[in-house]
Image 1 (cartoon, one colour):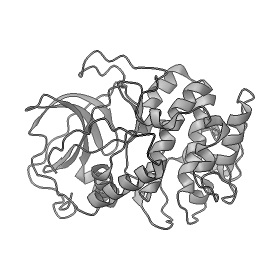
Image 2 (image 1 turned 180 degrees about the vertical axis):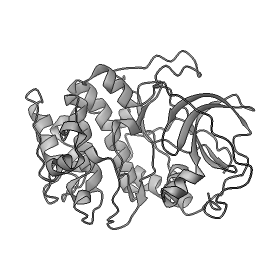
Image 3 (image 1 turned 60 degrees about the vertical axis):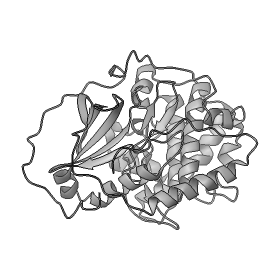
Length: 356
């Protein structure tokens, strides 16, 4: 899939029923999702690599500049060998198709995709403010006002995904990026899954897993609302509600399955009420999973001052705007060591990634 035009700033009218807007966005998503567009086998021939922004078990994220236009992007390079070795082929294929189909202010979208002998490449918009995780770690805690600004955008992203029948399943600060204006975009859709009913797959990050995934029960969108509760708690408390000594995963799972956590005394009454109703083991009591659906969250007292349409249109002043001097300024990203890997001289796993 070659380069697509960058998304223009979307505009949402307060005069149009927002559900109708979501319906149109879902229609657009489904239309794109239904048609696969294989990627050219040219690698990053059309780009100059400028720096490494991050690295992981599958590969790395690089700052790249398109030679013809001079526009900067982020390229996610994934090792075919690692993907096959860890049996993640279907997850990677799904991530590409989800990214290719999305159009929303608070989610990342795919610009282009490529492949070569040993790697797959997802070219994404450059989001120069870095991970929300990095900024949160620096300030340690958000005020409730600041947390609400960020949480409301994450809510909008989840609301959009769920309307498109997508489970996200990997919500955490590391997967939320901050743009140059201080607004957020959810990224990393490797665990996202299009489902019409319920699923049972075990995936996600331990501290954010809900009881139903740990206990291998069928689940739906409720898992994302549990993780949303963990995220909101962490924004204001500065730590996870289910942190365990020495990061003992089994101890953490026991705490999660019993909703065993301490609510900080400085949480406002509204925040305590919201978190308490999101971190509910009993699905018949968890917000987002009741008869009113996500309206129990969106219309909650803690969010009562949020202007949702101006937030979507990004006309609300952000509480923090990252300092970015130029497109090659990567000071908002953690420093990473980048060891060059030897390039393959023949096509690897051609059949497995034929449709990528």
